[in-house]
Amino acid sequence: MKRIFPISLTLTGLLTASLVTFIALALICVKQAVAHTYHSHKPVKPVTMTADQMSELVNQSTRPDFNEQDLAPVMATLVKLAEEDRITHQERLVYARLLQHQHKFADALAELDTLLAKRPDQPSALLLQANVQLNQGQPALARQTCLQLMGQTSELVMATCLLEANMQLSPSTQYYSQLHNISEKFPAASTEIALWANEVLADMALFAHQPATAIKHIEQQPDSDWPISSWVAWSKAKLALQQGNDILARLAPEIANNPAPNDSALLYLALAEQQTGEGKKWTTAMAQRVFIREQRGDTTHAAEVALYYLHLAAEPRQALHWANINWQQAKSFNDEQLLSKIRQLAAAES
Image (cartoon, rainbow, N blue to C red; front, top):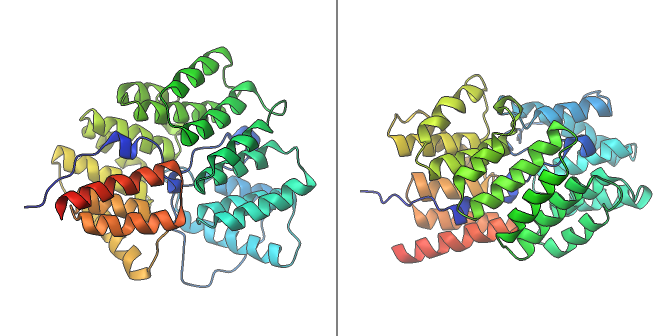
């Protein structure tokens, strides 16, 4: 009989690098995307699109009902523009975001360095740069980048950036109180900023083992506005409260008509099935997704594959294998926690 490993909030309390925090759209104009299902081994032709159209498509990509295969032509277009040195500042920002999306962090930072050399006071690029630095396990650098936002953004935006970096630099529950107080004093100027700040607050609450508080933050906005990363934070909290039925009832309809739902949605629906004992639909779908990833040698979702093997397949050695792959690609505090926890569990099984 397979052993079921309990989900730990210290493991899943903060989003891993493949689930990067949702950056305020009012500044960046590019929502964070978390799935990589558009990666294809087939040639993809570039398309003729304006920078605004590209930005809008990437904006839409955070929604659970978005088919990320639609991003492939955008990436092909941006690669072509970059190679021909015809890329604009706005296109370069989108390009950097998609490079981050593919875990090509060094390439993303190179594009941002080029952009910021010409426009050093562009807050959207600084926010993205700080986020990529967190992906690379460089919270001290990210903190310095966030400080450059002083006077260029609202108090809430700068504080969210800075305290998220501080959280990875020296994890502490004190940062939740600090950010919560600031968010009360300086309300968000837009829905997008509110989503971002509340998601960071929810992650901090999860780290402090306060899932009910995390849910309250996420539910400050209607779920029709939630990006996948918010759904994930909410789902983690629901699982911690033994409320997997809520995940099945609310998240499943969001991806019902998506031919290629992202791995994170499949993973948490499968975990909800496991908790409730209600069928195997999503567990089977996640197993099929993992099989495809392995057959293709696709490691962009290594964190989700590791969690699948740990919690659903109950194969800690395979989980450790994928956690190590994930660590080779992404080195945030969250990825370190993932690897450390799985190492402990794998050692206990040997």
